Image (cartoon, rainbow, N blue to C red; front, side, top):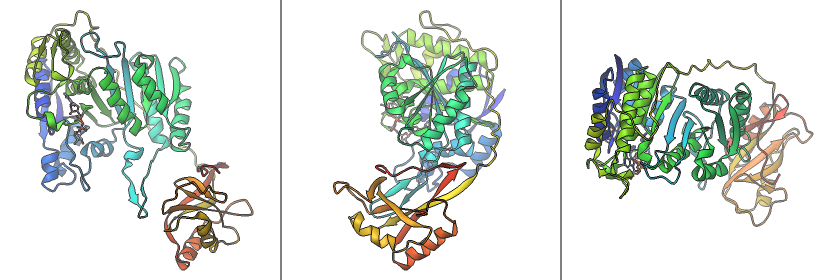
Amino acid sequence: MARITVAHGDGIGPEIMDATLRILKAAGAQLEIDEIEVGEKLYLSGNSAGIHPESWEIIRRNKVFLKAPITTPQGGGYKSLNVSTRKFLGLFANVRPCVSLHPYVTTKHPIMDVVIVRENEEDLYAGIEHQQTDEVVQCLKLISRPGCEHIVRYAFEYARTQGRKKVTCFTKDNIMKQTDGLFHQVFDEIAAEYPEIENEHWIVDIGAAKLADTPEAFDVIVMPNLYGDILSDVAAQITGSVGLAGSANIGSECAMFEAIHGSAPRRAGQNVANPSGLLHGAILMLNHLGQFDVAERVHNAWLKTLEDGTHTYDIFTEGLSREKVGTREFADAVIANLGQEPSQLKAVRYRGDSKIQIPKYERKAPKTKELEGVDLFVHWHGTEADALAPLIQAINCDDAALSMITNRGIKVWPDGFPETFCTDHWRCRFKNPKGGMMPKERIINLLKAAEAHGIDVVKTENLYRFDGTPSYSLGQGQ
Ligand code: NAD
């Protein structure tokens, strides 16, 4: 018997959770359930986290959490409970299998069996955002080496334990050379440890196009958080419906299982939603709990139900489907099929413990770190970089002089183009004009001098060399 936490969620959540739990019970899942309340009702009652503090205790004690989708109200102040759960519990890996069920579910991609392994804690989802000037806001994209090592190793271990042949990595490292560059570099390092598994890297834009067009070319795809969020919806949708796919959020202690879709408020309360996504999440959970027989029974009964043509509205096709059913009736049909297997679609077999253990991250020996300069980000209302440069040069000193100004990353001084549009957010790069390094206290001197000259510095970024390699981006056009 496993004790799990269940949240019924918002919108279509309660209906699909009810359908899922009925199927699990009928299939003989050994579950003891603690229910918690989360989501919209709590948010709107003034609880900006969307969850009672004591519910965290229950989630942490039980370690396994089956969660229906939650509505995060629009507007400031509400923190997404989905994102906080993943981060608080260290659920670093989000695994989303997307499989076509041709010819029983209409899809343009009859041969598709892709698993998206999405990094779940970092990237732009760190949620660190600031307004810096009247015209410019910023979101920090944080990518860490431990984060990359965990997720990439997880993807290769997943491929190994599931008998998959290839792991593909998607990044945009031609543009984001530091952040996506690190993800790609770690991918190459770890791929070398798995010579029996094919590996490849695609730039995310063309990779996404290829995924949408030729998904049969892919097997396991590992991605940073944002690309994984977007492309796992695309991958699920092109199998036939976003309502079909489930996801496992895995950490070293806890795990959360859910549908990949949201709470679809427009469909709520009408008994129309497809419960398959959450049911898939539950199948992943049963496997995680070692209840392989039950997982297999549920999955095969579900395949048989789709093969019978018993379809919810989202996958219903005139002439192909036999009957259009609601959420409850779909669950009844799956329950009636328990113990049966599909005759055309491939039945699943879940056997043995394929739990993935990722070694604890070991911090590497520190690199040598030298300060080469500093970027001062300045709020200035003018429009001509040539007019800004002398104002900034007024704070130059012996070993820290203005070397470049960029606006939204594009070099505008020296030798800017008059055509370049400029906002009120200017990056002024200071380096040692004699070459070599810059003492760190120089940053404080520069800030003091800027203050004295009425220059509005909104942020600084230090320019480091790690082990002798400049570890910051150049200005575009530099
Ligand atoms: P959504 O995934 O809820 O729905 C988009 C559309 O997809 C729906 O209108 C519906 O046509 C279809 N759809 C989704 N699930 C379906 C199902 N099970 N059966 C049939 N059709 C289905 O996306 P959205 O409308 O952008 O988001 C609604 C809310 O859900 C938002 O508040 C968002 O924050 C939240 N959300 C929650 C989660 C989560 O809890 N993990 C994930 C994504 C979005």
